[in-house]
Image (cartoon, rainbow, N blue to C red; front, side, top):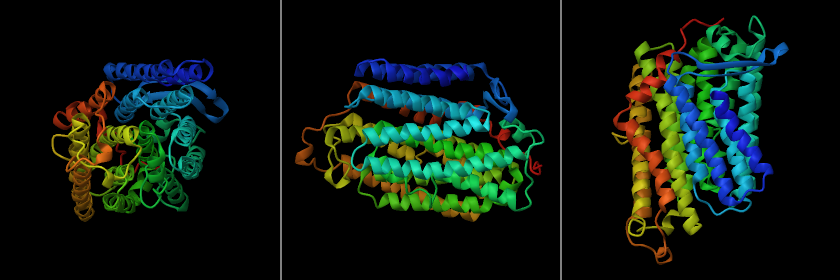
Length: 490
């Protein structure tokens, strides 16, 4: 089933590349492929199981220990499910496009490689999917973006490719330090190849942190993100924020935390400090933005800072095991919540651009009158993003800060300021866009159509469901299985 979840959208991208379909047929071919991937992942979820499940393995390059290995635990299955859902919504989102068939071909391609990254159990295949995701997003931004899209796409590609090369170096060093050459994630998690002491483990850890930190992104390697978001089409921004950024934090957990637990514990405090700086920097800079998309983009730096803080706490050797498990649970829930919430916010921003060709917040106001459905969706997503109780963001942040106070209380206290600033920036955004007098140039502004409303409702219903009944997601994640045993380094 996992192999099908990858291959179906990849095959759809080939069909779209070579079969002359019209715009509507292309759109629904790509959307259908993403939906079938989602169905396959739901079937895996329904099958249950502990540890890695739905495992399949076929040798690829046996002399190097490389194979087509797929399998999921609770974290990777949750991320794959969320990714497939975001791709369904983003691909089905109505757009006015040139060369629509190519656009949907790249969307389907990106869906396949993104899901593949979360379900593979081979580090080389992981790296291949990691790099291929850059290619898909590069073309989506560069060809169908607006403004200075080509420059933004180039900056995105160069930054993240540089980070991926550091990740490749780290992967090679880990594999060479295994008793038998292999790139099997399960083997490296069960028997971490590097001890904590010495320069080599520290350098490998640094390579992973920088590489995945660029993708996440965290301060100060986040500068590629705002121009990429501002100039990308709305659905591409939803995928970039909702799916691609999670590759960075997923990689931090799966590789350095689980495969280098002792080294991670040594450097957990500096990583937690980076997370807190990202929380504050992202929220403060977001508050200063007058561009709708730049404001949302910088909140991603803020929210991924929460995730990094949770991961650092989970990998620390300090505090209680309960505190570390709470932080890990919060980090994974934050990835899911951010994907859904910020994905919805970027789809909303895309709807605004489609109607006005403008993101400048001072040019808006009074949209609650002509666009009540848009106003309702934006308000719900904004309150979820600022951490309002009863919504998904609150569940994630509560877990993270409960865990962080048990391990790094002063950092947790400082990080709480980010929530206050985030609340202020979203409330200000809602006031600027939806309340007050409607400018004359916005007199013809139209509300969300049925398709847009249905797609946003599908995403935001999950945000509410996680907020009021998170048990099903928390039991799927199983944070205890993600935290390695201290002293497990080889």
